[in-house]
Length: 243
Image (cartoon, rainbow, N blue to C red; front, side, top):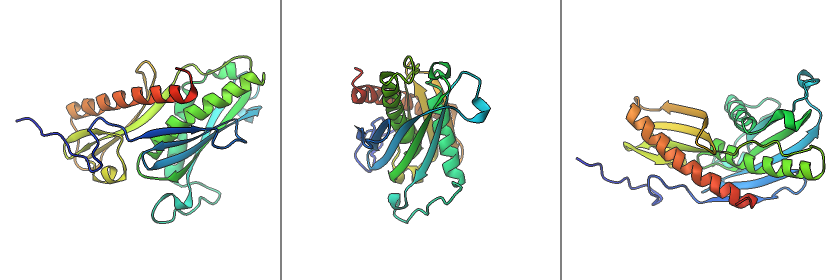
């Protein structure tokens, strides 16, 4: 018996992204910046170029890309307490994820002994803040490094590929794309996927919230994620005026 199409609470199809928007140059003082929106989720991503590298990297001839992530106090219905000195475990996990993802598209030798610092600050959280952060941080990083080349701080563009990320999950027995908070809470399975242009994966994070999931369900979610990320790549390029 065929499964009836899932009726999502916001009217989207199972394989449909929320409205995605990139507002570039949102913070003029940063080398690159964007306010990225996935539906009601909004994240400010900034990228700052800095000459020099951490002490453990000195003399290597290679640069470094690092990320920090945080949720602002008004980003959730109940006030999110500020991280005072040391970020909480969730923030640490997400900023490491963002850093890994963005380093995967940078040739650190071409960057030279320079750093790019990425900061992702959540203005409003409605599910998918980590995937919005990765997707937006790529746009900010690209603008920052494009400016660094123009200013002759580096000889050539060190970005080697493109990356975006999206959430997928099993909700009421069906694979759905880009979960908002309502769906994330109800999902039987929640997965985050980061993928390069050319359909190569950088990160897969999947957890069965209730029970377990099958290989077939995993492949359904992965197929949804691939479709969504290809759309995000196209939107990133459009925002950066590359295509």
